[in-house]
Length: 373
Image 1 (cartoon, rainbow, N blue to C red):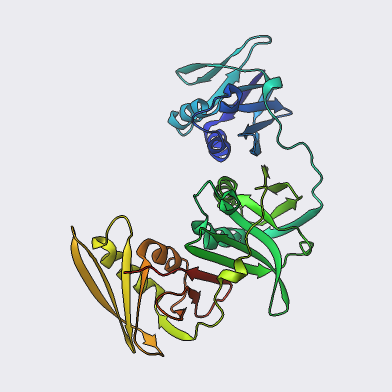
Image 2 (cartoon, rainbow, N blue to C red):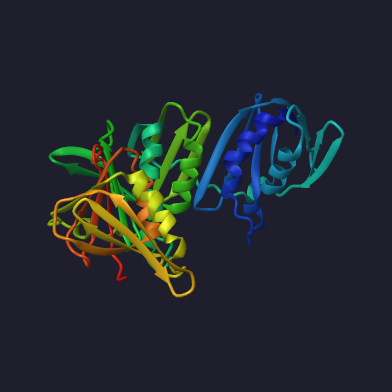
């Protein structure tokens, strides 16, 4: 096996695939990247048994072959080479050590058998196949992933719930994430051929890998779905992932229906004010209080150790005075997703969940549980 490739091309592909590999692995082969070279194409594959990423890149292949080498070590080597470097890989037949040469640098990497490398993408039938514009997929993930739960005991909340739904009689593709303290819901027009798809829970790690890969995608991204697996493909990249086996809770019951006290405020100004005032809030609760009175809102926080802080904002509030507390970090997570000039907060009382939406764009909806302050 022998091939050459530019440092820039290899680094770009390794950057896409290497993060799938966990830094600490009890199974040695899972620390490796599978390299297959043939017909002037280099294929790189990594997996953690639940998630697999495959990327193809052009290379000059003199002797075809395949092997596996440590993924993070190879990535670190390539990353530290000069920008214009050309790298030559050589693995003599029957040898278990690959030589990596670039200019005056020479490395030798131990290889593990290709036969030991697990296959996640076993060509499962994907009965649902549709396309989503890359920009829409990025937005869908950005608007929801911050609310994914980190609590491993409720594994069915450790991802984004993607499903077909209806909104005002119109079929939509809806994404939902919640950790029990806040809920994020985003919907977009139903893609062609997606109607009737099963509701699936996409794991957090898969969501983050898709978002990273989609950053460089310019066109539509192909999505394949079965009851147990998800497949994403575009350009020369294929990501295959197992789905979370579980039932997502009935999130509709969490969204309040009778919140008729409406607060209107600039989300960017609110986010910055919350950030400033929360500087003195206690590290454990991150609590901040909003005192609403007609055209003014006073944000306040205090802690026994750091002291206290207040800030006043001009708002529009069409109801009787109200005091309500929130986790400041959760409130900022929501307001940072709102890009418009205004947002609406639909409140009921100091103990009931609050709905937050962009004043102009209602594709995203957020529910925030209040705190005692």
